[in-house]
Image 1: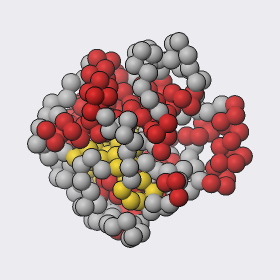
Image 2: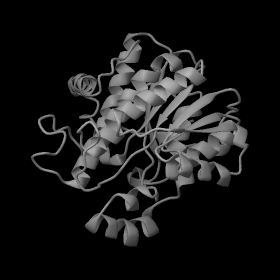
Image 3: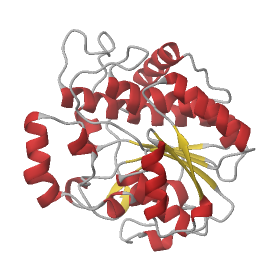
Image 4: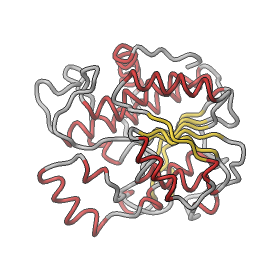
Length: 307
């Protein structure tokens, strides 16, 4: 792909025989990603918090249901992450692509079962642990990739290492931005470590621009919900099928290289076809990457093998 070409899901290469794990796959970007991959022959494991919703989503998809497996995963609960990884190990000799897509956005301050702020726990720590626990299965795959979905909001975020849980001050959108910044920092630090280890897995970042999903309405409250419901989603947002294109491109296009960041090509990266976009300087800082990595290992108890 060059910046002048317009990439669509019709250009996804044949994915027959490849195995994908997509978190948050029962709605929004995750469901659109699942549909597109299965249409091209990929086997997709829908990693979802609510199995019943996952099964209903599968029934509604116009794809071969034999290519889809629903498995429970609550990213906010590290015990659930470990149980999911154990099940993957029992069911699959390898995985080819992990799409770290699931997330929560701007809820009232809530703690995970392990006592971490919910957005940081779900959006970052759960995906950090999941990636580490599945990395050896990915290393055994074909053209293996980890695609971590961040946001344009990562450019407004920072890491409050002295108060990651929001105990001394919590603002819903600020902590959402922190979690999306953490996604970006993690994806880039993972790329550095995989490159240093000369492993086969590529770490790629993606963001969907401004896409209308249930994320903006399900967890948000107050003025944020009013904005998304009355103004943002109806007037500015693109549909999930379009918003999923950057992560689909990152997951499947042969030209993608580790460390790249894929987002929409339109004005402000809000919408459009996938292209390579710029990671913020702060998110690319190696010192910040090392510090987040070490803190994430401490908080999750997960150590990466081969990275």
